[in-house]
Image (cartoon, rainbow, N blue to C red; front, side, top):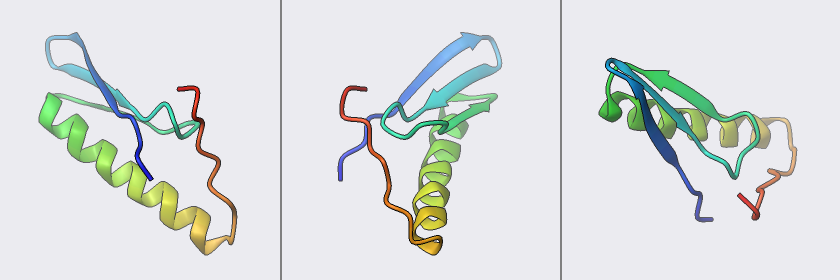
Length: 63
């Protein structure tokens, strides 16, 4: 499964990261590298959480 990730600089010291394919998967950090790392962890937690609850992962293809 391929997922799109987006990290944007909002202002000095504030980066927002999101995975548009997964609803509600967003992070914020002080650097771009930290935002990317947090986003990777958030996606992993999202997938694990759904698997543990035996829920299908809804991947938005229009994102």
